[in-house]
Amino acid sequence: MRWFIRVALVGLLVGLAIPVATARATTTIEKNIPLDATIDACGETITLSGRLIGIFTEQPLRTGGLLLTFHFQPQGVSGSSSTGIPYHATGLTRDTTVVVPSGGSTETFINRFHLVGTMGAPTYYVKETFHVTVTPTGDVAVFFDKFSSECV
Figure 1 (cartoon, rainbow, N blue to C red):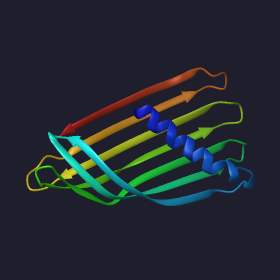
Figure 2: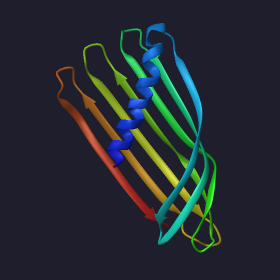
Figure 3: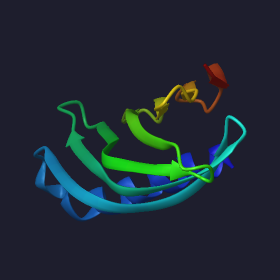
């Protein structure tokens, strides 16, 4: 599921970048994305609403490569558990992809999501760091994906 979301977001970013790729200038698009979600965390069912700020950047590189980034951050995202405890979402999700003319690429994905409990309720932390480096011959030179989630 995490891989699907990451691929979908990169696909969206590339789709936004293609029409402006020939401009040879940096393009940044900012979007307000409505968020309504229900999450099971820390023994609670938490219903959230608010919005995400999404920032998408495409920048052709002088050498002919391409830099693609996206950044998501909750803005005013809050909600409550099934037992009435208020929660507030903070954190960020960021991805940076560099494609070089020779065919190599790197991608680094960082997710730090905090669902902060109030009134003594625990906070739910999601942490993920993903990186892959692909050589021009298509070999994966570096790959790691470290994921954790915890209630504290």
